[in-house]
Amino acid sequence: VSFQGRLYAMQTGMKIDSKTPECRKFLSKLMDQLEAMKKQFGDNEAITQEIVGSAHVENYALKMFLYADNEDRAGQFHKNMIKSFYTASLLIDVLTVFGELSEENAQHRKYARWKAAYIHNCLKNGETPQPGPIGMEGESFDAEREEAGSSSVPSGTTQSSSSSSTYEANNIPTSNYTGIHIPPGAHAPANTPAEVPHNTGMS
Image (cartoon, helix red, strand yellow):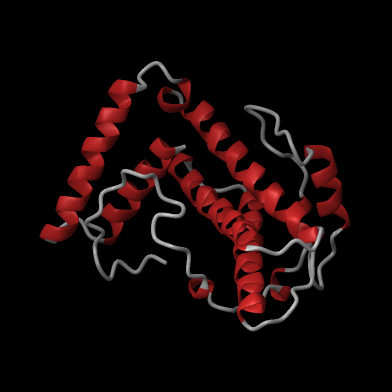
């Protein structure tokens, strides 16, 4: 997952700014890390085969999403659950290195970010968050969770139900997702280059 994460960072960084000295230095170090990982894990299919890599990242993102969703529905609100929702959304971002997101994954990402922002703001303001989907049709979403299971995710498969689309996009608050203050490095690989470009526009 860390390889695909760095690859996503590389592609995104090059789109944002690949000309300034600071960014070029950062991207150069990131590229060196990617090459080193290719050599070290050259026999790992998650790196050498896109379809395997995509399934690996997707399964990991879904596991984190299901963990956070289970905690949410059980009324167990805490920082790790918020981080899991937010990190799941970031991992779904990473899936874009393999192509356009499916509608289902795009909805999962939107829901995870919204939930992370909503719960974070509630706890910050001393309020008790409402568990589960709020003002949404949750039947199909619940059905998929039962089908997928909360502790295991089929390897190399893609969820086929259209559960996530059951909630209305219009019901998702437009609260700023950037209000979530995740500690630096909480979701990044430990040896990601420290020279992060300033004012990249990334949240």
